[in-house]
Length: 259
Length: 295
Image 1 (cartoon, each protein chain N blue to C red):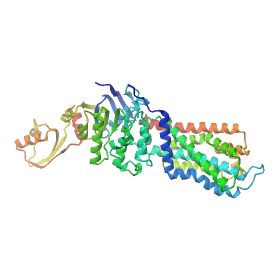
Image 2: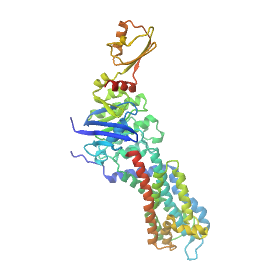
Image 3: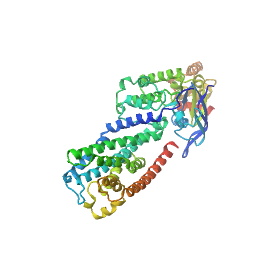
Image 4: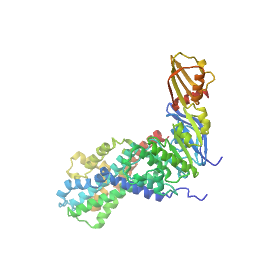
């Protein structure tokens, strides 16, 4: 026989990614929350102080755009994977997918690519808003560095999303995602600069993943609080932790559904 | 026999305390159209899950195209329609059929898959707006869109109205006619009889019959006969008549039979006066009880 044994993986990945993008785009709970919410938050917390300059000469507007950029990408990842995966489990999409020739890894990879695309769009919209409405200016190379670093460093939040998605159900996931991600962002100084937060939160922040994640963006402006290597080390550690939790819940589900 | 497409060898599956499949040996060859027939909870869905690698056998083995069922090369040759599986509501019928086509090396044209499922009028509709029966037809379209060699259809016509059901059964026959291997489950003897070349009867996790529809029909008492009598009758009255599961209570008589006409003629000849006579299709569940009892 000369039949092709299976469809090319790249064809599958492209088709799957295209569908994932459409699905996300058409669910306002995802698309609006992912793309608009960071801009709304920035309008309240960032715009009023955008014209100020820090003691070290860094523009507070740019600093807060970097903060909200970090918030925006984490938001896409934690909500997208957390609620998305929990919903799909609730609808038993996994059973049909499982019986199809689509490898589970391609299925997940398509979700990651989709989330990265949404993150990129969220960052571009946010920064464009900051430039046009807030009059915040930085060399294009700085914006490009912030965007690249935030996308590349988003792995711990993808893992956190998966952990929430596999650990909770479709009803609990949104609450859990909010309960974890909002306080995490706040305590890491993403909404309000760290030095304006209560002392005990300031001492807690250096142990949180969002704190180290935001350093990737802050340091691109020369406002980092630690060397890049230290941030990466923390982020790697959190990725391992969240991934372990995700894999554990995933395996429990595998045993129950497909063993 | 032609090349074996799917095989279960001594397959057992236990879920906690319950053993859903208790040692099934089954080989299905290329081009066969096989119906797994049995009442709800008989182990049909578990058997199909084992064939497809959706469940791992507790003991025994499952092979698909001679490979482990999880193997992508085996899966790429199968189309699947499952019970209890969902899909996202925000894509349109055409979009999701297009997506599933990408999973297969040589798929059908999208329009052809939609036509086989009789969903032309709904091609542009979002999945979330489909009725239960339409959704079931969509799953049929997803099963056939890859133009696979083998189709596994778990209760394919559940929830469909008469017309949709007829359309899907026609498509199944057409696909069988061009050489596809088809394994379907049903709890309608009538549906299995209309479609299949071979019926495998499963009950309580074991195969209790594996034969042509004609042979199966001869073995399953397909009609229920109920009536009342003026004067009570004994079992002796029914001696020599093709009767099963005879129940006599006061003046009520209940029985199962393959040949209700013969039974009634015999009873008339023996002078039995009947009232409130009812002849209906037998419930498969009770028919199977009678089969296992006699086996």
